[in-house]
Image (tube, rainbow, N blue to C red):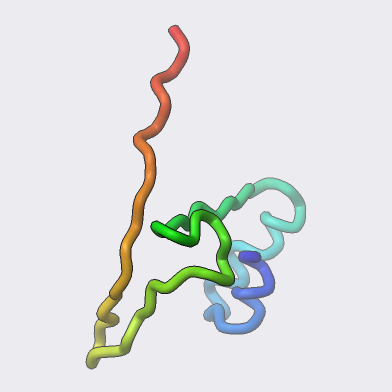
Length: 72
């Protein structure tokens, strides 16, 4: 989802920095969205960002898990 998003709304600097390496497989992206009641169903997320001057106010809830311990 990164490349289509950058093509739509990314700056020229972001496009130059990320699109080609991503398409060549040199950079790997993953998304990790989760909310109570929605899980990872992106169409069901309720979090909203509202522009407030130069900032964004974000509403919603987030839950997640701590990283698993690395094997020793």
